[in-house]
Image 1 (tube, rainbow, N blue to C red):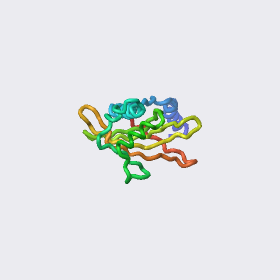
Image 2: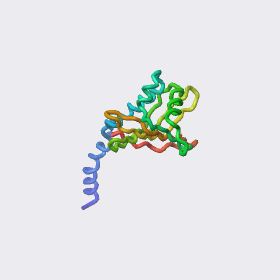
Image 3: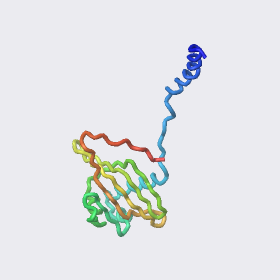
Image 4: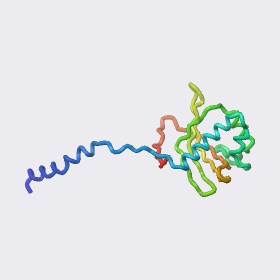
Length: 167
């Protein structure tokens, strides 16, 4: 095959594919699974109840043996009553829940997420990685244990890309 025939064949095969490669692919619209929706709503309700006037609504969402463990001092759990007191006096700001994942084990669900709270104009935001252990209680859920650790990003270090797993 001579060079001219080879170039013609190559042009016929490659050039029609170029416009197809340049076209943007279908946009991906992430969908939230049923469990992510259920537990995202429960987490939002927990914050709402913490700032509400009715302490019994917050109390009803917590397992009687609830405790929180913090990354800086995991050997010293925060008891239920202390956590409720701290939650009720915290600034009345609705945090953003990001990067949520739910692992369902039947009567227990582990919910992990990043909680970002804007603390005010000109003030830094706080960011925590939280793992909540929810126990099934009849037709509902109660929060049994919360693990929380502060998220710190080193100065000048870019955050790793997020893998969207809400499908």
